[in-house]
Image (tube, rainbow, N blue to C red; front, side, top):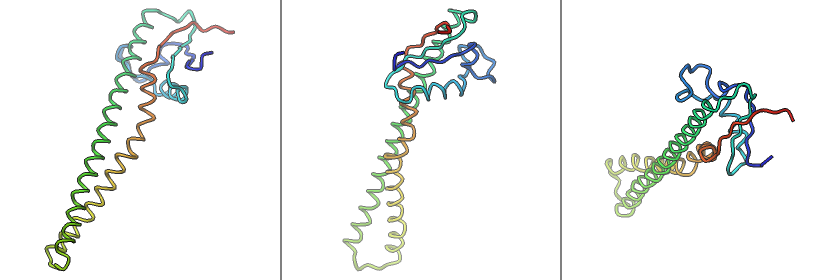
Length: 174
């Protein structure tokens, strides 16, 4: 067996799709169980070949073409969506960090140029600007450094699956 292969045994085509979706195979939602199995099987792979084995008497080449197209579309679509989400998160993180820099630099400059001023307006300004700057700094760093990592595993999965070859085979007892 090839180390890049993901071999799944199915009894019928419906096992790939949600039980609650009555649409045809072109539009039907994929089963969360099927996606979970693909996720587990692809965990340590850099690329994959998805092999779906099923009984000979249940196979239909036309249906398999439709399902292959549906799977390819699903994986590609979700890969592109997650890629955009990751870019947005990183951009928001960088923007938030830059905003924090403006607040904190403004606070530093005010402290430097008005060190002895102890007015109500200036003190109120410091009470607002310093925590806001720190908040934006932490929020920006969280987004840019940590939150995008949460979707990285999902992004990796959909990247692997979007580039995978999907093959239907006849199940044989060997």
